[in-house]
Length: 325
Image (cartoon, rainbow, N blue to C red):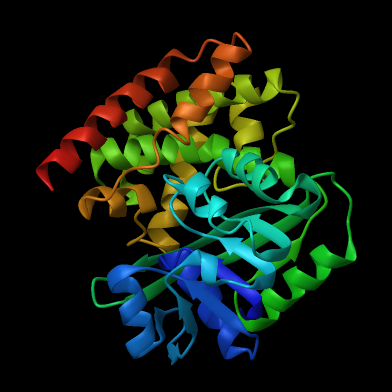
């Protein structure tokens, strides 16, 4: 069985963007894909439009058990089914594994599969959309941050971040990845909840005063959970979550609406991946994200009534959406 520099589990928008750029830059890359997506990649390669315009051939494996090994495993699939997918890779020789999925549960799953010493934290302020044709529209290229879960700065982190950055996807090695991951997750909960319930492009619900209020309150509840877990939040996120959690509610709403106006100017067509999944009648990542937050809150006796309410509402939306598909 063959080994590669990079193996990408999950050939959706972000996985395809990263895999395509690394392959174009000359790295040996394999995409772990199945069914129609695997056939698209085999026949047409990875096709990127939007911020970059190119197509590149790349190897595909439809059975994870066929992977001999990889220097770096990048997990970019949707969170449902991740544990089973990783179990199929346990026989492969993986030097380093990282996930750009939503929510902190990803690091726990990777650590169970490969051991915590082989796991890097990661988060992506990077966006795209996989079209039915197989093309991926690259819409946002801000930063893909990588770091050791221990908080150390190591050579392996610097090297992987440098390789991804040099390929054309902006990436940075950081030394406080847990704080950054939780800051993104804290903001993401509000984004996800309002994208699914309003079905609007991102800037519209962020600039609406009522939905901005709900985003602010969801963010502040998540901040209480982070505090209970002794995780420091930062403003280095899609929302200035530390400021939103520390100040008054009116200021928090104003901060959300300011970010919304920035999205309107810079990315007016941006749609959350959760909304893309809803419209495509794919399962939502609700149990692994909002559900994870609710379970952590219960374990730590942190009241989060609004997050819990949205968890149940979106779970119902997800079930009804899949029944109609």
